Figure 1 (cartoon, rainbow, N blue to C red):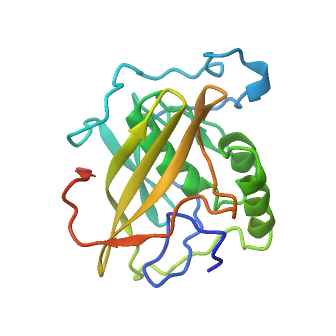
Figure 2 (cartoon, rainbow, N blue to C red):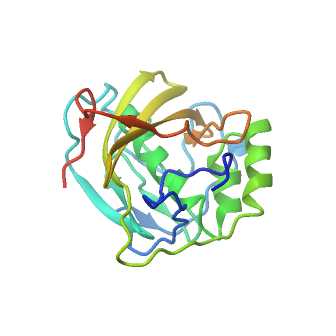
Length: 223
């Protein structure tokens, strides 16, 4: 697997699990995302409504989470924190909260593996050198890699929000594999009225997965 083109959704054997949306989301279907240049500061895209009251960093497992399959991987979804909107090419509209940033990290890195990855890239990845490098590497990757039903897939286990402001968040996503836990760090930015992933200058969407001996200190998902 390329050192640059790395997604969160992976098979334990090290093969990227490039994914396909299969289940209906908890939010509303239809509608495209307006260009960020069309929005004034503080505005949300038309039709995007979320509960932004939960501004504190979660200390306990979030309630109201449902799980939806994106290919072989289960992705957490909240009717209040997002993604609350979906068209044919991406899930979007996340709460302007720490939990919204966490959910966006899960969703965006899963969808970027699909055949509509260019739409996700344009709308949900921060523009700059990192995005350009990622685009170059993504162009030579296949759109979808399917594993067999018997293959073991890393599962979302928990998260930690290490820093948060109205414009940026650093989140760690904890994954459980057949050999233990791993964690990767994502840099998120609030831009154009929604959360986006900020890639590193070398095009990576998150840090290299590191082994975690004990999940203590992470907020663990339920379900």
